[in-house]
Length: 230
Ligand code: SAM
Image (cartoon, rainbow, N blue to C red; front, side, top):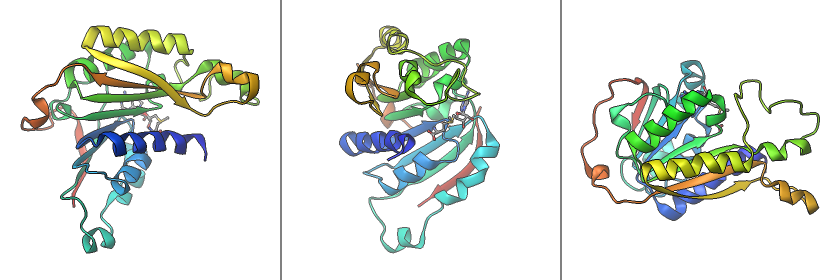
């Protein structure tokens, strides 16, 4: 399967194993991952997508609408889906108390100063139970045919494994998380040592909190674009 599918599958497998009830996908773009998570719900009750670009959000958000089959075979309890236009660098009260935050191919679109606010907002302010962050591994780039510079014109940086891991370990130290590293897309033979094409960090919060049962606050910074309750 193509690399982007492998990234989505990684998240789906995580959800299957850990069964988070409240999930936010940052940089959700055309809602592809949200749509898959809606299909492989595994007990998810609240699914939120956030993107800074309202044009991409609007494009495909109708694909999240319930299907007739969703009504004919009501599955595991009510599901709410919300889409917001907003930035991961802003503190938004309604994003607190989540079990899982996913950031698939998002951070490399931020300036490095924004990565610092992203870390503070996501790990410090939102403080979710777990965070999955994926980003290109620049050590893999020599294997990509015809590539010069970054993989996408909008990337502000692409990190080596050491750079990514340094950032992640600092986040753990500052905000009380543990992390492990993995990835998707492997080269063959001796090229394996460059690591995965996409590197992934899975963070787990070190302390238990009571926030996930607290009442959810109203949105005050983000703009609600779409909401559906099944
Ligand atoms: N996660 C999706 C996927 O894997 O298919 C799309 C990733 S796309 C490469 C990066 C997305 O991040 C874009 O849709 C972009 O608009 C969004 N983005 C960039 N900066 C952002 C920010 N500060 N806050 C929220 N989203 C942002």
